[in-house]
Figure 1 (cartoon, one colour):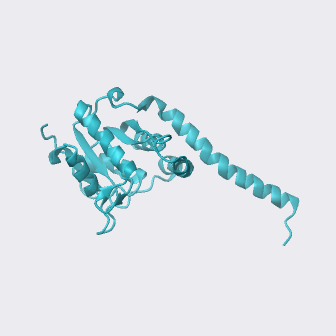
Figure 2 (cartoon, helix red, strand yellow):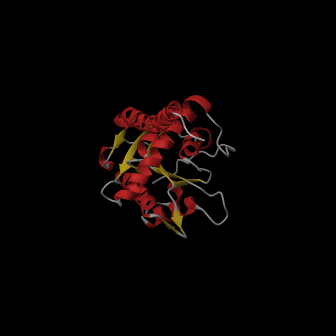
Figure 3 (cartoon, one colour):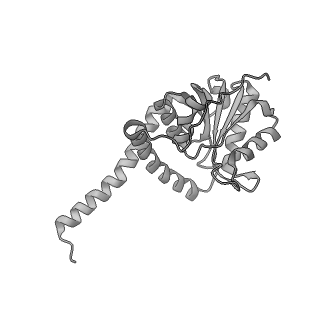
Length: 219
């Protein structure tokens, strides 16, 4: 079938909008969350809990990106900016347990087990943020993740009722440009979806379950 000029124009318009909308979402969320993001642990406002988002494990070791997220949270802990770490990630299969690996890595860096809480059902940024209040009673938190991901994480949490600020871990210049470019492109698409999720559809997470809270404990 030969495509006519009107059809080609329509296809080009749809393709253009498909590119513009995610980019616009990325720019909007970046601007909206700018006041809540810091690049240095010393500049982060003190909160009780730091939330670390999963980013993949290989066997019993975190990926480099995930390891640096955990290291950022531990830096906050050592400075007294936070007193508890909440590890949220994927444990959807018996042979894949992000959060246990995250906990062990933090313990190896000197964080007591009693100051670490695990969220085994943080299957996405949205689900991790959604579960913070109803499951763990977290109303304020410092989010720790890479710079490319932090705006969406903060925006999602704040839209879901958690007063979130964030510590941005380095990405551009620290990892291969092609890798971060791919992550940033994916992030633009994910950010557009996040706006739909928090403002329109507000889906329930895969699991909710009973309230667990985070124990006060002592340092």
